Structures are given as C-alpha cells and as structure tokens.
Amino acid sequence: MSSSQATLEPQGPKGSWLGGNLMDYRKDPLGFLTELQTRYGGVAKIRFGPQKMYVIYDPMLLKELLITKQEQFVKLKAFEEARLFVGDGVATSTGEKHKRVRRLIQPHFTRAHVHKYAVQMADIVDSELSGWKVGEHRLLTDDISNMTFAIIAKTLFSLEGNAYASAIREPYELINRMCAERMRSLFSMPLFVATAKNKAYKSALQALDRGVYDIIKYRRKNPEAGEGDLLSVLLAAKDDQGNGMTDQELRDELMIMFIAGHETSANALAWAFSYILQMPEVERKLYEEWDRVLQGDRPTDADYMQLTYTQNVLWEAMRLRSPSFFTGRSAICDVELGSLKVKKGQSVLFSPYAIHHNPAYFPNPESFIPERFENDYLKRIPQFSYIPFGGGPRGCIGNHFAMLEMVIALCMIGQRYRLQLKAGHPPIEMEPLMTLRPKNGIEVLVGRR
Ligand code: HEM
Image 1: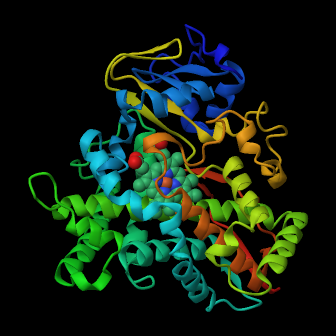
Image 2: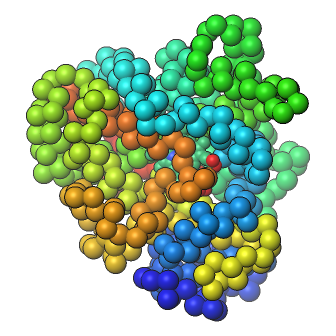
C-alpha cells in the first residue's frame, strides 16, 4: 500500500447513524483496524459518535505525523480517560513540559546506559525462577509480569523485589479494564455518580496513588536509598525558576514508568512464549542459539548482540501481537499530512498491529517467521512499516530497555526449564485492553530442560 492511496477524499465504512463505526470497533478492535487497511489502503475515514477521525497506514504519512509535523499534534484526545490514573507524565504531557522531562530522563534509556542494568535484570529473573519446580503448573503470564515489574522497580527506582507489586499491580488490573471500557464508550457515567463500578474504579485509583506516593515519601526521607537512579534524577530536577518537582509531578512520572514500563514488555514476552510453546522448530533453534552463545552461563550485555535469533523471535512476536496495538494524535491546528487535510482538534489514529499485517511488507502476514527479520530486513522496507515502539520524539523511550530485559528473561527461562502448554489449554486469544494481552493468561507445565 503506497502513499498514492492516501487520496484527497479518504473513504471509510458508513457505520450507524448515531454511533458511526464505534459499535464495529467495540466488537472487534483488531479486526476493525486491520480490515480498514485491507479495504481503504493508506488512510481511512471513520466516525466514533460525532467525532470524525482518520486512521493512517501509509508509512509516509506516519513519518509526517510522528516526525516532520509532530509539533502540530498532541497525544490522542481519547487518552484523556487514561490521564485519570497516569496523570500528566512524560507519556501524556505536551510542549515544553514534555521536552523538559524527556530530556531529563533520556540519558537513563540510551543503549549504553540500559546495558548497565543487565546484571540486575538477570538477578531478578534468577530470583523469580528460584521458586519454580519441575512438574508444577504455573500461570506464566503472571510470572512474567512479576519479573518485568520487579525489573522496573529495581533498575529505575532501587526498590527491592516485589515490595510494591501488590500496591500497584493489583489496582492497575481493574483500572486497565475499566479505562479501556470507558475509552470505547460513547458515554461513560461520570465518576462522581456513585455506581458500583465507579466506586470500585475510584478506590483502585486511590490505592494506586497511595502505592506511588508511599515510594516518593520514602525517598524524600531517604535520599541515599537510590543514588544515581532515575528517581534520584527526578527528585533533584529543578525548573528555570529553581523549583523542584512537586509530589504530584513525581507521582505522574513514576506512574507512567511503572505502567508503560512493565505491562508492554510482559505482554510481548508472553506472546513470544505463546508461539514458542506451539512451534517445536522455533524452540529447537532457540536452544541451539542459547547453547552455542551462552554455553550454560547467564546472558550478559555482551552476549546480547550475538543472540540474534532470540531477538528475531521477539521482533516477530511484536509484529504479530503488537502490545501497543493502537495509538494516535490530535491536531492542535489545521495541518496537512500528504494530501490529507486534518482540521484543528481532529484525531489521527494508527495501529501498529494492523500496519504489521500488511502483506506488502510482511508476506504471509499471519505466519510466525522470525527469519523474516534476518539480514537487516527492516532496512529494506519503508521506515514506519514496522513500529512496535512507535517513532519520533514521542516514540518509546524504553525500547532498548525492553529488548534487553526480554532477551535476558527469555534466555534464562528457556535455559533452565522446558515449558509446555498445560494439557487441554484453550486457544490463546487476544484481549485488546489498553495494551494487547493474552486473554486469561497462559498456563504452562514446567519441565526439565
Ligand atoms: C515491549 C515493550 C514495549 C512496547 C511494545 C512499547 C511501546 C510503546 C509505544 C508504541 C510508544 C509510543 C506511543 C505513541 O506514539 O503514542 C511508547 C511510548 C513510551 N514508552 Fe514504551 N513500550 C515498551 C516498553 C517500555 C519500557 C520498558 C518503558 C520504560 C522503562 C517504556 C516507556 C515509555 C514511555 C515513557 C513512553 C512515552 C514517551 C513519550 O511520549 O515521550 N516503554 N511505548
């Protein structure tokens, strides 16, 4: 699909009089977003209730949206609902505020800096695995989330183990579900109306707040507890007037790191396992690579570059099951993307999930083929035709971090145990909430390697 398909008057499905295309989206978001690309090509016009929007698939238009004209957009207005709990941190803030915080934290996410976390990451995986026993059944998805949460907590905020996991992960589960539901509704009951659902939502939001404020309180009292970590940088930051961040500002930045930083990586890893567990040939090649490169040792940052098949398995899992399955921007002024005229206030969505299913760039798109990424394949297809981490100044800051932790966790689990899907496991379905996760998780039988 080429830019020539981004016509002057984009077309789209008609939808119903009142809701437009919202019902079709709600029924099957992934099918809806993928079908639009098949039917309309580089850009489609849709309507959610009174709101007309565009969904873009053309890599050239994406480049304009995310790089050349990104200053004329802010994060999707529909994400306002998510601001209720993530607040105004680096993933949601705009303009100067966003630039300032992004500049401040960027040095902690360079490839070189992130690779210094390799030992801590491996220690955490090691300690999570120490409780596993051959012959038992485990909810792998839960174990993986524990690992990625503990990794963020330790590397960025110097918090031990899973001390804060229940304070943050548990309320987040309910919030995630309700937030996705509210974002997909034409009308959500305002939170001040005391319905049972609203009460549960509000009390989860309060619990989440408590968890994060406790961490801030502790570190303000014990600044020596995490010298040089990301939280110490945030605590020491001053604006032009010499003012430090307020507790609320710190809370927003921590919250986004916990949420953006643990769930997406956990989902990507879980999806990788969903394929490995069902494809003996992929498993065999991974074993071959781990035995050859690691020879029984723990993976280090130096091994990372040699673990190419492992990386390709993860790239392919994120192609087929992109954790961030849709996102978008809203225009702050009238702006043109190619020949597409976007009006001030109008939203432009894009779906990494659907874009990754384009057969023009990924032949046989439904098949899991890690080898397709060999020989720098991504350099041979247009930029922005593969975007699991988005792109441009608002692309994922944690991409190197995520790849390293996923490679380490995947190797270490697979070096130690041979996992099998639990007998009679139902098909692993997709559940698109705020991110794309395996519905009801993945249960495995732990076997000897
Ligand atoms: C496999 C794992 C991950 C995936 C697939 C992923 C995906 C994404 C995507 C697609 C975006 C851009 C969204 C947009 O353009 O609207 C994003 C932004 C972001 N991600 Fe990630 N992410 C992952 C891991 C992480 C990790 C480990 C961290 C932190 C440690 C992180 C922190 C962030 C932040 C802070 C932003 C907002 C950046 C900004 O607006 O300046 N992510 N992520």
